[in-house]
Length: 146
Image 1 (cartoon, rainbow, N blue to C red):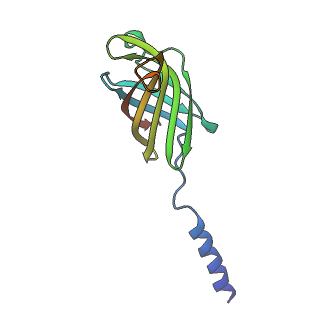
Image 2: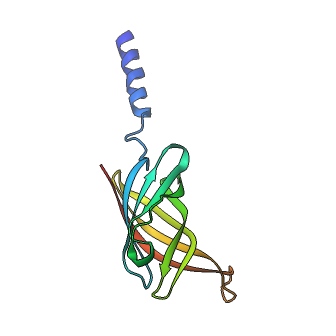
């Protein structure tokens, strides 16, 4: 009888364990992104504990050069949805460079791969916009760096 009781306790404990650990963004990610009417761009996103991180912009500086200093970024993970954002300066179309907030939204494809949408909201006022800011959208993929 004691053996059956012990087996029931062990079985219920095993059933209550999650089938797989929650995926964490902590680590370094190679990100490829494209905004509408722009060429593909690249950055490395480094996520550390507590939602902190940084963007190392690889080809978004003037003349498609790397940006020397990493830019602060933040991330949050809620119900499997990953959000990452940070202030950057990007080329918009083929005319101008603008500062603003780059926001990535995605779900994990697997523990080492992300795919999703992004939006870049500039710091420039735009009267025609309902939100009074210029914005553009795009897509991205990211792979965890080993």
